[in-house]
Image (cartoon, rainbow, N blue to C red; front, side):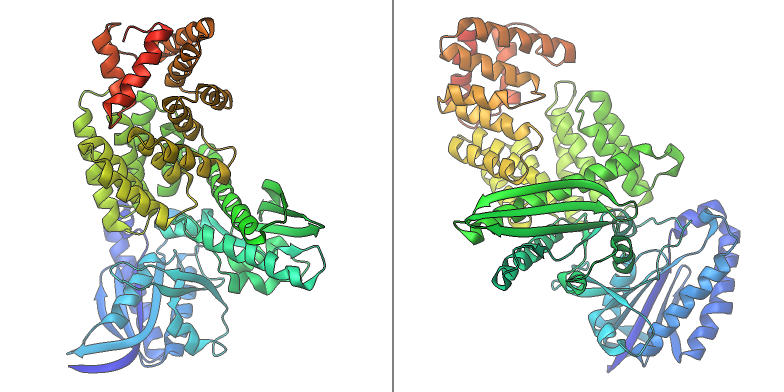
Length: 590
């Protein structure tokens, strides 16, 4: 079979199914016209040839990477002109991927990795955009009047090794376009650049520290698959400049900018950091870290972990608020997920079911959206552990199936392994497999709070109480204002270790403790012979259960034992008996 080096251009129509549903005949006519009147003349002018033409997509070959890029730029320009005057939902937008590589030739068709990478780049490219591999950019840089934004290493479907990907700057989703792929949404909503932290100390030797923090923050943020983070090679070009953040954001194609400074004074070190929404100049989040300069690298690690975890939470919160402000008829797959998460966090039956409907709608828009698949699985986890479900086993099995489906879509997302860990723990009571999966999640993303929070609870249920406390502390260290489920783990572990005073103090840190925590703290008071406080806490526990409608069906011993075996599924029955002993002392019939 013949082999040759070729530049491969792959393009397809964004939201083709949606366009066909709106107007099948009109869409076919318009697309056929554009292939004939725009694509064919451009291929001839730039010495390219069509390898395949498939309704909504095209695969073309060029002998020159320069010609392929120039053709793509002109193609997107002409498509824009043809879309002028059309309603947003009627515009025909292309996403384009270009790769330069070795191909195999059989008849008029092409095969091999060179073709496959181009097709994968096209599948993740943005609406109206052009995404290119490193090999293409190396060949065309300084030969075309075009700037390239480095998107870093990207894991492409069915490729073991990541590929460095670039985006043609200034070419992408236009105003009024309707992005429908996950990549479009993330670039538009969750994209950010971290500018080099400023060394305020003045000493040249401190610059390594400020640079190191910046690079580590970028690396840490890059582990979150829902974020698009500009590499330090691109953001460091703005070093030592009095920059206009709006201009920087526009040039890099990002929504958020992270800026910071480092100052050393004697044995003290101060690091300040801000998250800014570039278009508005609004400060989304700001924090200052003061530390003793005893172990400079340990301090660097601690600050980096805290900043990374906090930044992700703030970005997600800003996006959630934006999505909740949008009208119901103006939502995309990403916004539907954000609205669903907001409902899911409330935890009540109607909220879980409402969130499920939102996630399902998101998947209908984007069947390959791994995040929507994961979130849908989480609704079944909430159902499986709830008191209102009629079939917790069926809900748990659905969770497992959705986790497997999400793994096929994106095996490198740490939250997929978190879902597997939930499923192994809840469905099969297999703590060992659950622990393997949660450790894999932490390895993939050691900055994600949920990974540490769940490992802490899993460890506590498995009788590893010190490990449970350590995991909770790791989550708290990364984000002191974290959701309170990590403090729940710490209260339970400290109680089971007999540290009743510490458990009460940890409970006191909660602003909105769940109902079960009042029972745990009642058991703590009872074991300390503080009967009045134990009875007060137990009464509050009963009141909250009644308000939620989530208590056991009767006040009999067996009902309470079934209730607690579900809400604290301990591997060792002795742990449950230790809890039951404290609850009996507090006055619960158990």
